[in-house]
Image (cartoon, rainbow, N blue to C red; front, side, top):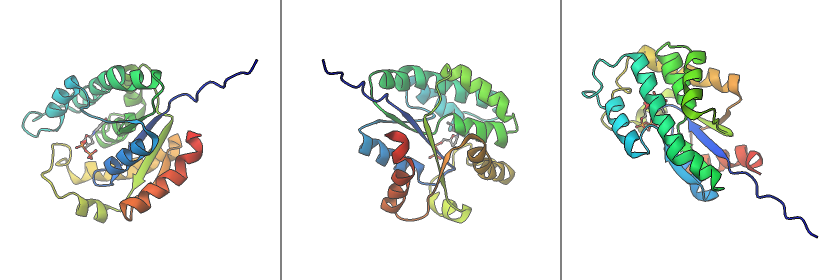
Length: 205
Ligand code: TYD
């Protein structure tokens, strides 16, 4: 009797980074290459779309307290995991998400000063402990980021310079602490895609 090997379990791959790092483009490219479900946070469910509006609209979210911001991000993540991520993984499909709990650790934990461990606990509750198998952090220098940000700024993008500086340095710190795969995001889309693939190919085998 021949034994058939179980198919490799589906993986959750998260892209993280600041605005204008090209992570949305790269996440979509990787999803296409893998035949994975491409998804994003905040907002990739009907309930999430409403949360995203409140979170990012400068008027809808006027005066939002940092703890409310953290809870709404976590609510979006809970819905996203329950409705999109877990069902895909259980059906055997890889999932590539443009942002996941790493963004909350950096933006709310460090940027807003709520604390990485506290925000981690909140996200663990939200996801029922579903962690990404691979986290890719795309890094580009601030000047390149600024050049790529040519649209109207949302509520978080309008937060002060100190906040953005804490976010910028926070990504690097947490990459080291949590073993995220750091990829240089400077170059053409094809060049960066090749770099991403070279960095994670083995982890997906
Ligand atoms: P989006 O337009 O999706 O930005 P980007 O193209 O930069 O990914 O906006 C998402 C914003 O929400 C972005 O400023 C980061 C922020 N964010 C958090 O602060 N915490 C989170 O947990 C997530 C998922 C996003």
